[in-house]
Image (cartoon, rainbow, N blue to C red; front, side, top):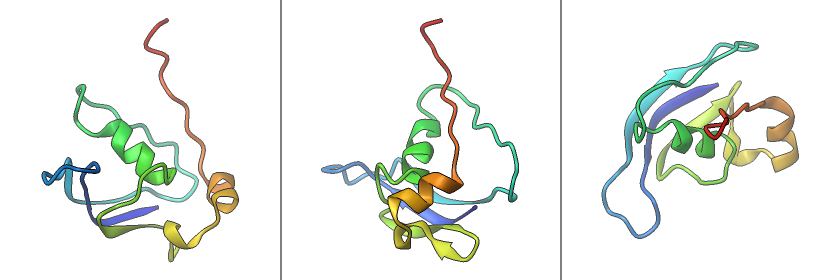
Length: 87
């Protein structure tokens, strides 16, 4: 999976909450997003799962932009385990 210069802002906001994010996650890797509250972990996860779309840049799996995949195809390629903060 590759993030290429991803910018994102929430609807109705002019300020980007993610700006110029580029990263590569190796195939079949176990990857954890960790960081302080408000640093963008959940936003990145929402973008990967297409609960929101990037404003500019792209997120690709292989050479395919995830916006060109069906939801079913995307979900077959990505697994997410959320931390249960109430436990």
